[in-house]
Length: 542
Ligand code: G6Q
Image 1 (cartoon, rainbow, N blue to C red):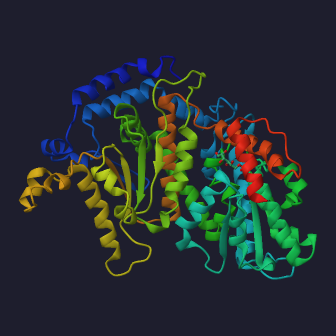
Image 2: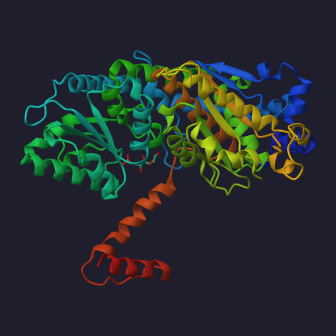
C-alpha cells in the first residue's frame, strides 16, 4: 500500500485542479461535442453492459482517476486479496470470498491449506442435503417431507439469503415455502411461522459466530415452537441444521454437528451469501443453479483480476463513486433496479457498501481527512419514480444513481417490459439533460410556472444493462458491487472488511438486557438520558 497520504498523492491533487477547471461542466455540451460519447464511455463484462457516459467526467477525469487507482496500489492490493494475504488488518484475517466461487480443481493455498478443496467439500455436502430436501427424501420427525424452510440469521447471515431468494424466485421450487427470520422483535418470528406446520418445517440457523443475540434468541424460540408442537426434543435432529464456523456452540445449542455446514473466518458476513450461508438459496434453486450463481461471481472476479483498469467494470464504478464522494461532495448513491425480483438488492447493497466502507481511520489507524463510504439506498423502478425521484431531478443535492435494466422479462406479459425499460432510458436521459427554460417556454407553459418546470439536468447516472436476471447474472452483479467497494476502500486506504461498530452494538445491548428484565429496580449508572429511558420503559411494560 502507498505510503503517501491520499490527499498528497499527485493524482489526487491533479484531480482537485481538474475538478476546479471543469467547473459546472454540462452533460449537454459534452454530448454535443462528442457524438460518439454514448458508445465510447461504456464497458462490458460477464454479460453486463455499463454505460457510464452520463457521468460528469471527461477523458481527462478518467485518466486521472485511473492514475489515482495506480498510485493507490489498487492492482497490488487486489492481487494480495486473491493470494489470501491478511488484508483485513484489524482482524488479522485473509479476505477470501473469491475462493468461495473458484471452480472445482482450482487451488488456493493459505497457510498450507488448499481452501478451494475445502470449499468444494462443503458445497458437495450442501448439494447432497439440498437434493434430499428438494426430493422429499429428507423426512421430518413424523415422517412427512419438508415443505417449509426458515432461515434464521441476521445481517450478513440474512440479507444475502433473502435477497438471493427474492431475486431468484423465478428459479425456485414452488412446492417449498421459504421464510427468513432476522429481527429479534418476536413479530418477525411469529408472523413467519404462524401458518407453518412444524412437522414439515426445517430451520436453518445461520450464524458465523453462533453467538449473535438476535439469532440465538430466535433459534431458541424456534426450538421451543417445534418441540412444543411435535412433543419431543428428538424432533430437533430432523428439523434443525446449522450454518456456522463455530461447531462447539452449534453442539451446545443442541444441533448435531453432522447437520452443520461450515465456513471459515476468511469469509466476512456480508461477503458470505455464496458460502454455506447460501444453503437456503441452494435448497430453493437446486445445486446446479447454485453453481451457475457461483460461476457468475467467478466470471466477474476474473474480469476484476485481469482486465486493464480503464476497462474494468468494478474499477470504473468504484472510481466514479470516489469522484462524486470526494470531488463533488455527494453524500448518497441511489441503486434503482428496474426488475421487481431485485427488490431487496438495494437493502443487500446497503450492508455491503456501508458496513464495508463506513470507516473513519486508515489501515495505519490515522483519522482520514476525506469522506469515505457514501449512503446507499434504493427501491425498484418504476415505483420510486412516483416518490423520491423528484428530489433527484429537481432537488439541490447531487445524487448519482445506478439504473439496472434487463432486455428480457422473466414474466413476459403484453407490453409491460417495454414500458418498464423505456423508463430506464427516459430517466437516465432526463436526469442527464433536463429541460431548459427555452424548452419549457416552447411548450406554452405559463411564465410564472416556467421556473418550476425547468430541470437543470446534469444528474449523473450509470446504466447497467443485461439480457435477463439469471442465477449466473446475479452472481456477476453482486461481485461487481463487491469489487467496486474494494476499489473505493483501497483508494481511501481503509479496512473494508472489519465492522467494529457492529460489534459494539452487540456488546451494549447485552449490558442493558438485565436492567430491563430484573424484577427489582436496577441500579442504573448510564448517562441521565439512558437511565431515564430505561426507567420509563420499565413503567411502560408494567
Ligand atoms: C457482516 C457483519 C454482520 C454479521 C451479523 C451476523 O459482515 O459482520 O452483519 O453478519 O452480525 O453475525 P453472525 O453470522 O455471526 O450471527
